[in-house]
Image (cartoon, rainbow, N blue to C red):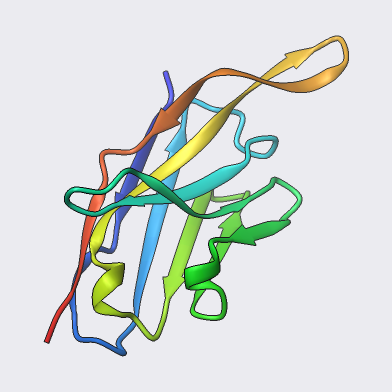
Length: 125
């Protein structure tokens, strides 16, 4: 059974930095695209950044240049380094993994994503 556990959230002043971590178990990991989502009160959950097993990363426009997603396949960890934080970055941040299944044609994405429990990030003075 897949399990994603986040850590590293907290309270930080505007302009500050935080690093979120997520450890994954119960999934292949290397083939999985890992992602960070966030959800602020009253808003829908949105994609912040994702990273493929090969290390190709994409970012939401609002975090480009400020956030960096990375992964350590040996440790089954994914990270989100957040810098120059803004009040509007305040949200619950969730770790996400797609569902990769090994088929005769190699690894294929299938329904059945995995989510962590979330970690609160609050940016406030």
